[in-house]
Length: 394
Ligand code: GLT
Ligand code: MN
Ligand code: MN
Image 1 (cartoon, rainbow, N blue to C red):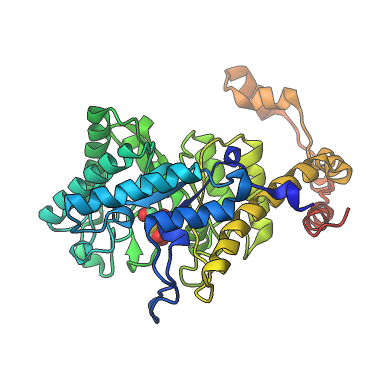
Image 2 (cartoon, rainbow, N blue to C red):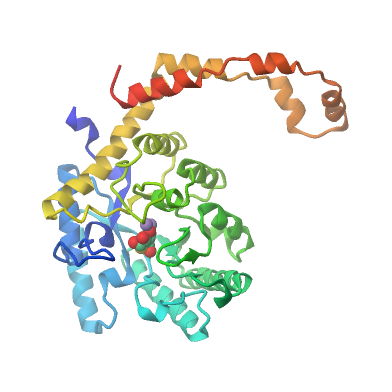
């Protein structure tokens, strides 16, 4: 059966240089693995992708590829060996982003910093990251405002902070248009970590911001499983809202226990049932964007185990995709779905469009509340059958 879950480029699986390249540092301990050069990360991913070249591509922050302070000659050498590794591995670059959180200059934010010079530096850094990404053919640019927030609310006016953020995104959209880069921008929310309180805490916050931007058509969201779970939210619902709005420009797949520190675990490893409904949604809705695994291997992993981690992310996705097909084709599920839905085209028509006569008809209707309440909804059976399909019981 193993062959059924072999990734191919059609799956559009991507990883960031910072994901499989993560050396295992955490706030309490030093790295447990050797740092990898960008070309070495590509080699590792080529191994994880196997003979079918299952990894579509690699994403990076500007400084994952070219460290801050590199000379032009150093930058050229790094870019050259990265490009050669990509070519050899038949991989591309899908998404690029700017690191606006590691450097101490961004200690109080980038676009929302209280310091106009820091804000200008952040915008300049993004322009340069867009130039760099364009050299590698990236078409998605992610904004993750890691330091956009506060610990003490008195530090910033939250309305001014929102305006600063909006102005920066508007400027960068115009820069992309000016340079004809054709980037689509994806805003990534997170409620906290590394700041005490981060602005735009959830995907829903960003979906509400987008219509107020200068170029709303160019901007969408990049929801991340772990970030919504940190806020105790249902990730599938966030993704569904983004899809319905035509705003799912990218997705960060990983896993996270509710109520814990930022974990970035292997996709599907904490809550496979939630991951199943997510994959089902993405696949059934025909999401054609990248499936980016923004996760880290356990700190205990050595390099071979990091390869297993990357394989595991893809394999779990493909297993869940297969389960979604089985779920939809399952006769018990099908008959339960029929039973739990009570459609009426006439009633839908009546309530969908307001007319005076529709309103009068509706006002005059009598509903039998007891009969409505008595209708069976066998959701226990539905969920148990779902569990059995997930657990491999046919
Ligand atoms: C960082 C963060 C991620 C973001 C990355 C993009 S960097 O690792 O935890 O969720 O997607 O800047
Ligand atoms: Mn992410
Ligand atoms: Mn994260």
